[in-house]
Amino acid sequence: MDERAERYVHVLLFECSQCGGPVTWAQVSEERNLEKVDGQPVPCQCNNCGWSGSLLGLHSRQHWVEPWNGANRRSIADHDRDSGPSA
Image (cartoon, rainbow, N blue to C red; front, top):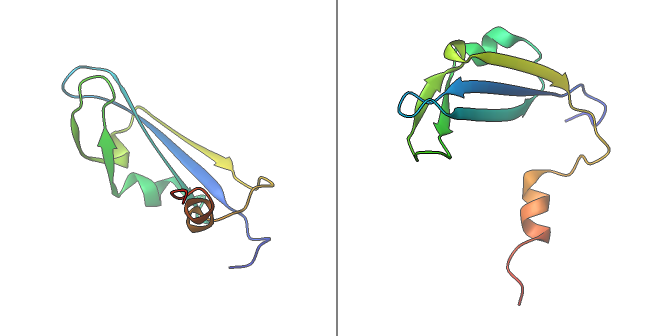
């Protein structure tokens, strides 16, 4: 991947169907297009009541997209390796 490629974070806010609490989901993508995320099921879990399941992005109450070009471009794998169990 080109290190200068534009990246975006998609943040979706849902309402839990069980307790009405807020349920959030976020993912970094090279796609800025809302429709690509809105048409996909996303895994969700409510921190209030414990409900979990998949929701379509289209059913979110709010969908934000922000540029994600921060200085910290380490991959999740790098983070996991560096913060793994200590010996």
